[in-house]
Amino acid sequence: MAAIEKRTTSDGSTSYRVKIRLRGQPVQSATFASLTKAKQWAVNTEAAIREGRYFQTAEAKRHTLAEAIERYERERLGDMRAKEARKQHLGYWRAELGTLPLSDVTPAAVKQKLAQLADNPSERTGKPLSASTLNHYRQALASVLTEAVKNWEWLEASPMHKVGKKAEPRGRVRYLSDDERARLLETCKQSSNPDLYLAILLALTTGGRQAETMGATWAQIDLNRATLQLEETKNGSRRALHLTAPVLELLKERAKVRRIDSGLLFPSKVNPKQAVDLRQPWEKALQAAGIEGFHWHDMRHDFASMAAMNGASLPELAALLGHKTLAMVQRYAHLSPAHTATLAEKVAARMVGGGAA
Image 1 (tube, rainbow, N blue to C red):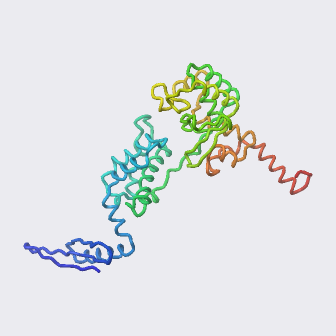
Image 2: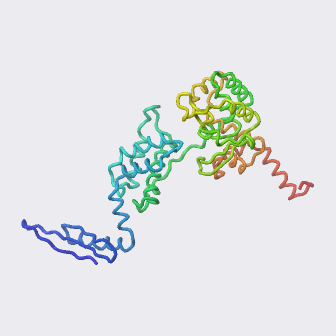
Image 3: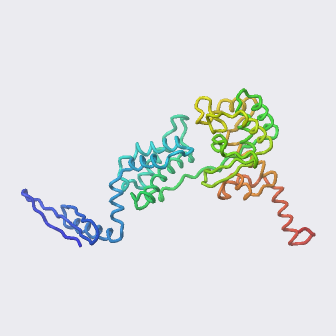
């Protein structure tokens, strides 16, 4: 029950002290200059305590966003593949809203800061940030606040549910012609870098993400079964990449002379605990092959496009690429007309006859 005590100071001013005592709960108190506000607080607070909402709200007022970000970085960032990018995004939120208690991190405050990001050009490119980049900033903050709700009980609900994602343009699909692919492989084979050809061949023939193939370890490779086992993928599920005969032969040769100070398939000469940086030899190979507008990630598109053009269904593409839904592989649907035509012929034959089973 709530008790309100009227207090008058020596200078004649009046205040109202409220105390709420409920069985099994700590006493809550507050002081107001107005009796009306004191009564309103008493009613709202008592109801919140009975419904189990009050102490969550108190936690949200007790912890700042900066505290939440620091705890997230300490407990969750770990070996995240995009760790540096996530830290950069979180650094923005720490600088802009870090001093606010979590209770004051409202949808309106977040939307305002995202709008500021959208209005300011990138320091690196001088161009406005893309919808995809803005969504990465949004996701970084959403991840912190989700932890605060689900695991830390610092927050009752995440304000990010009311902060929508920016609409992103349909993903580009750049794949190689047979001639381009042959030129690229030949220039990589001729490269002075001993890792480039195998790395590119592995990427082209598995459809693996750059982090998955370049971060691969010998422990993940089974030469007898010709597989590269991925334990932790972007979507959180396990997946095995098939190693084709040319890749398998190169891996067997590499296994004979592999470094003993690193478990990585492509260790850096400078730091064997890190994967080698192939950016410069890759760009030189593209230039030598006369290939423009092609990025490392496009090798994943090249693999998927080739699979689609050779009859792979959308569910099969999703399985090959490690996507949980078909939405991400819809972009390749138009590349398998022969496959869909065959299915249509079978359906039609069953409907109107013609002997096909």
